[in-house]
Length: 597
Image 1: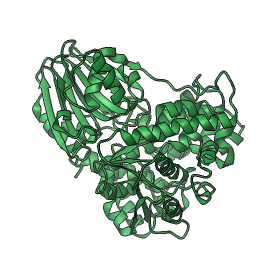
Image 2: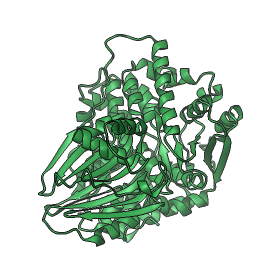
Image 3: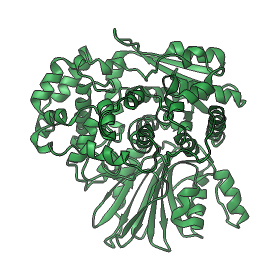
Image 4: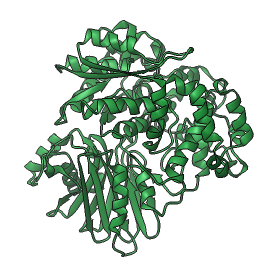
């Protein structure tokens, strides 16, 4: 797990080493253990390393294979690397290290652009082929690891976060109007390849690119998810056994493929509690678990300790609880925003940030339950969409998900950003996938392949890696995802959602955890914007920078500020916080010199 960056020149000029010198400090928090730079001809590569597999300097990057003429920078973890390594040794390949990075080099030499198809893990990597004078770029199937880039007629630059690209310079920082519509309508999800900035793009999940030194670029989609029923129907019992077997395998390989201890982020929900149960069941002793809580608000509790306590009472883990007061949330919020690769409005971003800080003092790797709700149908809006039979697919989806319908969006922004209903158009295209049987299959297919990537997955990556903490997500194991996508919707939505997981958990997880209402990582102070938090938000939206930027209609802003606790989205987010967070991210990353300190 690391931070990577680099540049390929198209104009026959030598890369300027100062470009890497500006980019690498913005990746330092992702990789606190080592820094490496490499340059040859038109390309230069940089990396900040978090040592998790093969802790020796032999696996430092950029990793160069002079025999094959290949050099790699890599962020992530390849869970089947031991098997691939043994296979390549049998074929006569020589290895200089014991880690997973070098295995990717041999995979590329063996299979070329098809090599990502053979990798099981989370990854973003870039390989320079000195013989072919090409740069190969790839991102994992579910987009767990990020990869951003800029390109012009003169060069292509890439990095693990936009801040490093901004530090490199020559980036068009104008707001992308289509991305802005997505930002304010799709819960801050801006589907790849767009970002909020015109000049920065991101590689789509399950996709690779090949670039030549002369500037030609080709893109290849190497993985597609199918949400179609299997040819032979299965009983509920058969589905349970198949899912349990695959989930066990996903949890196990994310435990053993590490040369450091692995803990669990225990929220008190079904998903993380089930991970604890399966890990203990598999023989793990002295398991490290971590929970965080915040101050209550009158309408909502700020912690789920009552549920996580039940889990650690059943399974005697080495448990750590952290209670964060509201004044610390506000004090540390600017740091969390600086570490967001893109503006993220979910109230639990700061929770993950503060939790990661504490956890990183104990372990380098954790397992987390992200992805289970999207893969197995756990959110409250899925049954509502299913029951809503009026209109088209996008009508049914929008009524229960969009943060703002198009007329409200038009009222929220200034005339320069008013245009078509871009979010509706994008969602309509995504829901038109031929690889899904029913409406709910189509919704979950879109969620898993698109929406989840730029909401919970990105949030967990950003906030954990801000402290050099690697988060592994077993519920997004691609084989488990492929299996779950075939499940009939009724086996997902029954029992209030995640029916199959609840059946698996029964007897392993306390009934009080299984049968509780669906919970979220609560930070009530950011949902009910009051007192000091309201002052913080007001200062952002009333600032000279905000008014000069001219994104938001002042009348709309004033209306939200007048009664902030009365304006919530369909997904229970604060509308005024959504506007403030976007503006604050722009102030922190565009108006100021990028900083990740």
